[in-house]
Image (cartoon, rainbow, N blue to C red; front, top):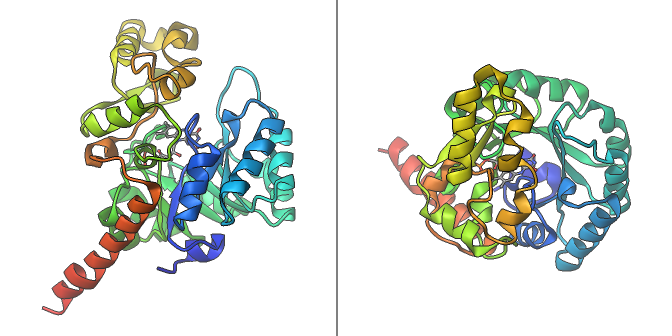
Length: 325
Ligand SMILES: Cc1cc2nc3c(=O)[nH]c(=O)nc-3n(C[C@H](O)[C@H](O)[C@H](O)COP(=O)(O)O)c2cc1C
């Protein structure tokens, strides 16, 4: 399946694995690359630029296909060494970067100078248009369903994607709620050139996270995510658990007076405990509503092959059949 996204990134299938904190290591990025998609190493999961350089080197050992690096610009207590991470990306010969969070304008000239294609992930049409205006090559349009940070507008993909299609000239992928061949065909029908998945890729054999995390996704339904940090305007969609319910109780109790310090215990530094040691009640971790569509833990290759076969089946049989009577 050739689309503007497969052409842009030199990949076989229009499927991207979005950056994921403490999930997007070389093991997953290379598995996605080897299966014909675009895998992403998550820069900020690496403690230093030198560690990112080493992760890129490890990934290259596991695949000779293209892969990318996610650079997230979110409010954080201590500002990461972005110039250092960017140097590691450039020196590592990576040719695709997924930016997310704040506007990446400041970093675009140096990335472009080195022939790096930039796909910016955003949750609103106005932000996608801004990304286009500042010279991003593509955008990942993240609907309200998504795991992680859906923004504050709450527009689901059935509206957001066709709105993006009406406004954008650069290609975009659909992100949030994508799981299978049906998702891919729907995304294409709404004007996207492919899809980006987060949660679905965690429940794969190669995702280097504790089995408890994968089992929790398989067990969860579409009703099991919650939105936290709304009062801080830093909304995150997470899987519910005891810590998340405690956090929500604090949000209800403190209302507009809530401060980050009040919820530190539930959100700060919890990722390693969840992803590595499988302590599922340690705190809030991002998860999409799409968990309700995830019922197994295949290899990445099986997952991507199945998505492409299902998508082609839907297009060739069901949809073509409908118009041919
Ligand atoms: C556990 C987890 C961690 C994530 N961490 C990041 C991150 O560090 N940076 C980022 O840009 N997006 C992050 N995301 C968002 C994903 O890249 C992707 O946009 C999102 O998961 C898409 O929605 P879906 O989960 O419904 O597929 C994360 C998502 C999950 C589930």
